Length: 111
Length: 113
Image (cartoon, rainbow over all chains, first blue to last red; front, side):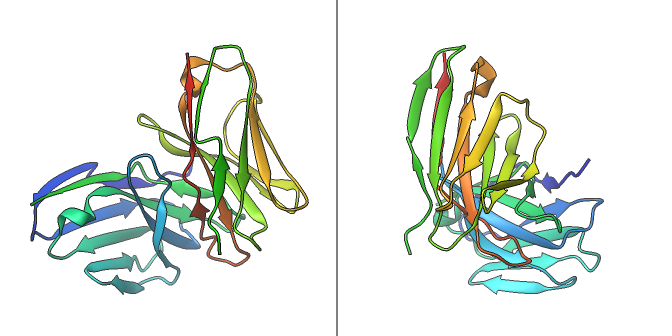
């Protein structure tokens, strides 16, 4: 069974704090993606990481792919209320457009 | 480019009925995938179509089916609806390439009563 465990499931922090979301699996992925979803809308792609050990930055968001391509993390620096939403990691295998999603992290940033 | 569009956005059906949902992918994208999202199970993969052929399938009963047309537009059908089918159904299109990045539509909210 292909599983992605995402933690924490819920996170409530104050504006200005830092946070890290983790995504772990026993399987090796060809790529891993992070999405952000707002209520009533579809997920929006934030980043794709492909190479083991890869680090990508998107403004205050830093994404890292584990060396073995089994895990990933999302770090947000100085969180803002606009960062509030559901963050999802998704792993892709070499079998076409099938993504395995983690359960998601519901982030709430209070002003 | 226009994004992925899904119709209808909201739907209310009764147990036992059937429903058809529609998805128009981003122009040039040949892969279309469908996902079911519920609070308890999260996002679960239903199936993927590429060039009118089902390329991948998730672990859903045969009541869930889909198809893709020559213009890459896709439909999914659910027959004999059950209360547990109430969910947000998301369609995603993907360009060719090894990273399998997916671009999601806004979803169809299906409520079964």
